[in-house]
Amino acid sequence: MTIGRFAPSPSGRMHLGNVFAALMAWCSARSQGGEIVLRIEDLDPQRTSAAFAGQIKTDLLRLGLDWDREAPWQSTRTAAYDEAFAKLESLGLVYPCYCSRSQVHAASAPHLGQSEYVYAGTCRNLTAAERAAKNRPPCWRLRVPPEAWTVRDRLQGDYTENLERDCGDFVLRRADGVYAYQLAVVVDDAANGVTEVVRGRDLLSSAPRQTYLFHLLGLPAPTYAHVPLLLAPDGRRLSKRDADMDLDALLSRFSPERLLGILAHAAGLLDRPEPISARDLASAFDWNRLRKEDIFLTLP
Ligand code: GLU
Image (cartoon, rainbow, N blue to C red; front, side, top):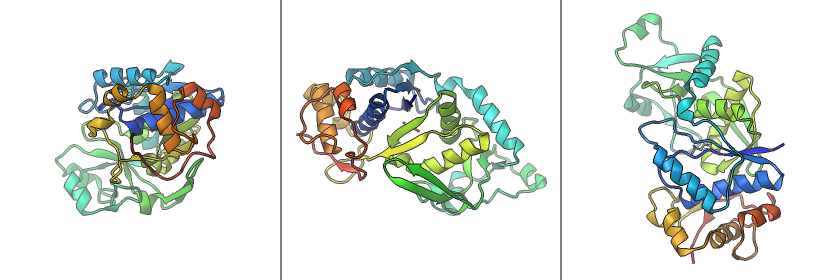
């Protein structure tokens, strides 16, 4: 049985790009008779809130995007992340990094993805004495090998990174103790029985890190499909900052069915932007019709 998921970070209202990714995840799972799990990714207490989580749930339901069960929120899952972290430590793959943000940036190359960087490995081989001489709390990084790691993406094809060269040793746990998204998402996708991850293309460059963690932790990895991002007519990615793309504003202009029809048409799934329910769209859903490239969206 296919188990898909919504994994929103409650750091703001959903914008249309989030809605589109959720719609594709829902349609894919439902078109296979599968289930959807909702998991609130509130790892970072400073940037997320229960109020946003509540709004996101309401927004999903207004669009007809329901779920079969809700997984525990990430803020309650520290014990499970501790266990995975300890396992990686026992493999000798975790080390403390004392670099400040500006030191990391000064010594790094850009990550193959987008806005990230490849850590230069400054703290990789510090001696115990060198560690003891540092006087800041460390973050914790995973030592990665110089190995090509390929993710098979249903929509984007094979995506390969050399873990050491293109990605670098990445953070598992921040200096303030908050676990990194990369670790939490892997532990939770496995715990929630997720078999299929459908999400925005901006996360494609995280997929090799995640499948590598599944491998190290001996957990079953899901399949992946990274769907196009929505772009404003000037080519900018839609973001939570675009007030006119906030769902409240949009639903005051369009019915849910009209909005879904506009999105499905822009994505190549419908010949015309006619109103459609989520359920009918799932019946007609076809990966072969869905566009791979990012989508310029002009609202009528
Ligand atoms: N919580 C992440 C976000 O809202 C998504 C994580 C994922 O889909 O893997 O950007």
